[in-house]
Structure formats: structure tokens, C-alpha cells
Length: 114
Length: 115
Image (cartoon, each protein chain N blue to C red):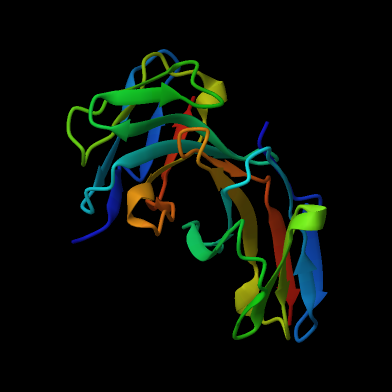
């Protein structure tokens, strides 16, 4: 199916464990993003990527690692999860060179760190 | 620095009332885009509208309308004759060409429409 998919949708883990959230898009959009959503903070950018092998930090990158070896995939890894990383994570993509440049979101991944 | 402010954290209206959600933005760029997204209780983020900085024409889509005023750096969203299905969190966002195509979001306004 065309679109942007995130997995897992729900994850419970323990402090100190490594967690990877997956994101896959089928549009071949050049830009991909990871946001976290927390009450009172809205959507905050963690990392983004302008193309394969090009990534850059957003507003809240500490504790997170990303990679983008293929255009369609943009996994987010929490190397050693902390309780403050309990959040809803949204992956998104956009294509600024098409003229549309609308940010399209995945369904979100709800992560709980105990 | 780019910034989006949604001063209204929560709004409650009775069904069929009109409601306006405020959005004020800051940017030094002359070319930028403004957006509104809706997040219903189911949690997904739904794109509603995009407006570029050179187009100040107001837009109407059914019960929704948007008022873009560069003089006050505002991009307000009005729902006419609100319905229960309009209950959601609404986010305003800004994107410009000089910061790597980043999107800056406000903190959102939670709208509750009471039947």
C-alpha cells in the first residue's frame, strides 16, 4: 500500500534498553522527519533527513540516533531508553521539489519506557 | 528564529457555534509556507491547508476558512457552524526555505465541540 508506515504502533520497554522505531514510505519523498509529541509541547523535531545518507539534528536530538541508507526507510533508535522518552513518535515525509511540499505523517508509534 | 504560537490551549464551544483558532508566526524569510493540521482523537495527523507567503487571499473550504494576514503575521482558522466531529487538536505550522525544509509547529489548540 502506498503511504508512510510506522512500526511498531505500540511498544513498552524498560529503562536502559535499546529500541528502534521503523518508518517506511512509498512515495520516494526526499525528506523524512521524526517528531515526538508530548502534552504541552506540541510536535518537536528530533531528526530529519534531506536524502539518503544525509541526516541532521532537530530541536531535541539527544538520546536518539537515525540512519537513512535507503530513501524509503528512516529508522529511529533510542540507544538507552529513559523514562523521559516516553512519548508518541511520528514519522513524516515531504517532497519540497515537487511544489506541493506537504508534510505527510505516519500513524504514530506510542512508546512507554518503564 | 522561526516560531509558531498558538496561544489558545483549549477551547470549548457548543455545536453550531463559530470558532476561530489563532496562529501567530515569526520568521525572517520572505518565502515561507503556513499549514494547518488536524489531530482527531484517533491520533493521526491530517493535513488541512497550505498557504505560501505570497498568497494572502483568504480561503474557504466548506465550513472551514483561513485568514492570512502578513501585516500581523497571523494565519487564523475559523470553523463555521461547528460540529462534534470537529473536536480535535489543531496544529499550525511554518516551513521556510532557509532552514533545510524544516517544519515548525505550534503547541496546538484542543477544540471540544459540545453537542
